[in-house]
Structure formats: structure tokens, C-alpha cells
Image (cartoon, rainbow, N blue to C red):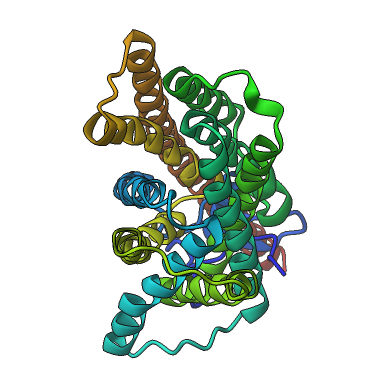
Amino acid sequence: MIEPRATPAGGDAQPCRGAAQVRPGGGRQSGEAAATQSGARAGTRPGDNVGVAALLQLVGSLLFVGLAALVKLAGDEATPMQAVLYRSVFSMLPLLLEMARRRISPIGRRWRLLVLRGVAGYLALFGYFYAIAHIHLANTLALQQLAPIFVAFFSVWLLGERPRALHYLLAGVCLGGAMLVVRPDRGLLSVPSLVAVGSALFSALAYVSVRALTRSEPTPRIVLWFSIVASVLALPFVLPGWRWPGPRASLLLVGAGLLAAPAQALMTAAYRRAPAHVAAVFSYVSVPLAYLSGVVVWGERPDHLANLGIGLIVTGGAALVASLRGGHERDRHERGAEADTSAAATSEGERHGREDEQGEDGAR
């Protein structure tokens, strides 16, 4: 079950030194309580770093675009479910080596949530590969960009995060840029298109689950469980009537699987360092990256509207980072001011108390 509040992995937040607040009734409250309440409203937690999360998501998106390109190139010989199986199995090999090197146990503390993340990721992955095989890539990419919007709502419901109105506005700017880049045609209400929408929905659930898991689970374990669950769920659909893809398609799918492990690790690390509704927005960068891959691999050329869309995505993401950093600075300033005021009030109360005691002693 996903817990409604965010706390740092391994324990509670450390209190701010010297900060105290007076609660009604005369009790004192550490400044960290106010910091925790303020951070919970935005979904932040100690150790978050939005700039690093954006960079990790950028590199991870680049790898995911490469993965999608390899799967698309192999699509004439392999089924979507075979692509899921190859991607899941071959992504486990580097993960197991890394976990052995770091002596990380595959046994999870929160196995139910790990399984939920695996099932949601499997459904999202199959829907994405199915849509790529049946409708235009532009339609699939456009519909996949609904995931960050779903994440914003899931993070409120399941994580207790409180995105500001500006975050929704900037997410809309990025989504509008994505639409300008891919410009989907009118065939959006077909079954494959609805499957793509479902893929975005399950992707959002997987991302929110990852954010919750980063409180207690190391990154390699989260990624490994996803690969295991996806492989187990794909086998019943692949084994009956199995036909081996050709050597070219097999190599492409193996390459996709090997790219998946670092891509998932980077994405998980991004969600470890930023609220889910924030980290998800940076995935919009995959749209211009995918468009650039089309230029390199398929000889496509972006036009003026596509260039405008790329600019909106970059601008919206940069504005989001700037707004969050400014908000964090204001929160720290306000908490410091509150702590100073509370400390002054406490000192003043203690002084008056000592004067009253001295007056009573003099009267006696």
C-alpha cells in the first residue's frame, strides 16, 4: 500500500538546530515540524534536488528514446509481447551484476508495492509497444505525454503531494509543446489509441509507485523487480506458438533490453530526488529527443511548428525548475523567520516569568 506521506529513507527527518516554535498551550515544537508540514504540502522531502532530477530524467529519456527506436526497427519481425520479454530479460543481466557487486539483496522490504509497480509497468510497456506497432509513432508519443498529467493527480491521491497551480500550468505548456512537435492526426479514437492512453495511465501509476518505493528500496532492486514481474507476465502470451525473430531483430531487441536497465535506473533516481508530479514533467524532453532520432534514423526534418514545440518544452521545464528552487528558498526563509519569532517569543516569556518570580519573592 502506498503511504500518504513522504519521509526520507532510513529514518525521520533531522530537526533544525536551534529552531523552536510555541504551540497553543505552552508546549514547544521543533522548527523541523513546520519544515516537514511545508515540504509535505509540495511533496518534497529532505535530500530532494530538482536540478539533479531533471538531468537524470534527461539522460534517461535519451536512453528510452533509443530503446523505442530499436523496438520500432525490430517491429516487422517481432511481436509487441516478444519485445516486452526481450526488454525485461536482458535488462536483468546488468542489474544482477551490479547488485552482486554492491551486495544488494533482491529481497524487497515492501514486496506488495514492488509487485504493483511491476504490474503497472508491464501493462504500460505492452500498451506502448502495441501502440507503436499499430498507429503512427506521432500519435503514440502524443498520447504518452498524458502520463505526467495523470501523475499529478495520482501523487495527490496516493502520496499526499500538493502541486501548486503553477505546476499544472507549466505541465500544460509542456504538453502543448509536445502536441506541436508530434501533431497527431485524426485517428485518435481507435482501439490502439485507447490502448496508448491506458499505457500513459499505467505509466503514471508506475511512476508514483517508484516515488513511494524510493523511501525504503535501493534503485537496482526496484528496477529488478519490474523486469522480473514483466517477464513472468509476458511468458504465458509468448510461449504458445513461439517463433524466433531473425538475427537482426534479435540483436535489436537485445540492445533494447540492455538499454532498459540504465534508463530505468536513471528514471528511478530522478524520482528519488524530486516529487513525482515534478519528475514526471521532465519526461516531456523525450518528445524532441524522439523527433531528433527521426531526423537521424528516418531522415525526417522538423518544421517551424515542431521547433516552436521543442522550445515550449524546454522553456516549461526550465521555468518549473526555477519556480521550485524559488519556492524552496522562500520556504526556508519563512521557516527561519518563524523560528526566530518563536525563539524571541519564548525568550520574552521566560524573562517575564523570571521577573514575576522575583516579584513574588520580594513580596514574601
